[in-house]
Image (cartoon, rainbow, N blue to C red; front, top):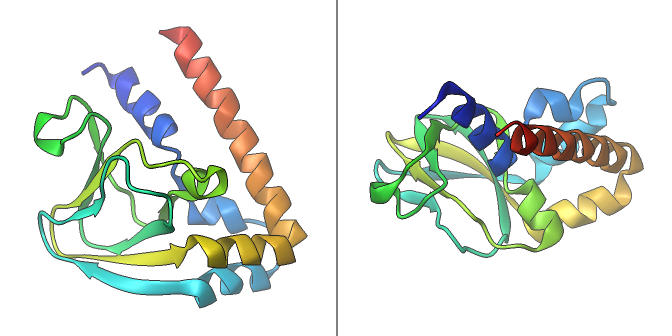
Length: 152
């Protein structure tokens, strides 16, 4: 795999770093997300997200080691990346009600924060500041994807 492929992979699966989402926003925004987050433990080799799962939840790795795979099943992957701590996965899918197009597997015992899609939508409808920030991030991600695809 070429080094550029990892940048494309990272952009494609659309993770959003927690710090980017809340940077410059009122402290209430981060607290609101934390309030709707539930902790779920995944044992090693457990699938956290399966390809074609409905987007009922958003996931954020809080501890442990996990990997994300684009070409699934994971055993047949061509491209994978480590899942970074404190990055949200599944926000794009939750907003679009699309199914996941990747797989996340726990490598070690992992703690994930899990946010229910309905709770996320309710929060965004009540918080225009957070909603606007998310729209800005998604717009930037879209430009990055277009740039990465045009460079190949």
